[in-house]
Length: 298
Image (cartoon, rainbow, N blue to C red):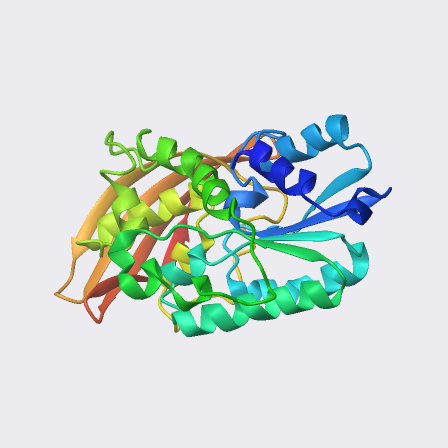
């Protein structure tokens, strides 16, 4: 995301907003949390650094969490408002809702709740209009939350800001896929992250490994069998592993609905090297392969 666009928002604020000790609360997902990026390189970090030079009375408070949905935002926003008492709130949520198939009407209600909470706390609000891939269909391409919200105005730069935020993701799609296939991300696991069903258990296994590398918690939840899916993965919780590579040892198709994949994933944690050797079980449900569980070895 282009932090210069956000500066335009600040320059356009009323006079009271340039008072001392002003804070800007950002509530978003992986596009704003900086997950997987080097420290200081996310758009939020760049915005904060720029503000320290051009508007030193402002500080940025980043309350973004990778994989968050609008419902997660509703649960987290009020405590953040109570703690920080910000003058402005930037909301960048909704992309993970689309990935999980949450109804647009529910997304709209959650976003309206976020806006009302922020305004009730005395903050102005910017709602970033996060682009959704066209293969999710018209309900998400033109969802109801993009309709007018009356007094809950959004700034005209929202589309440009959100589009720029995704520029890093677009560049990443041309990079080599983390799963080790040798293909680009967009031609390999990225297709499944964007909604295309994985054709077999091995493809799903590879896409889930790539999702761990990229911090796509919503995808991991969506491809985990509901009978064994954990309540939370907490991918952002420290210490974060540095994933080093994936090796598929075997893929066994037991029948049309059941398969196993044996793999070894290498990673570093706190500077120490580890490997996870697992035989994973997969089940096909309603035309889509899902991860069930696995047995670890070594």
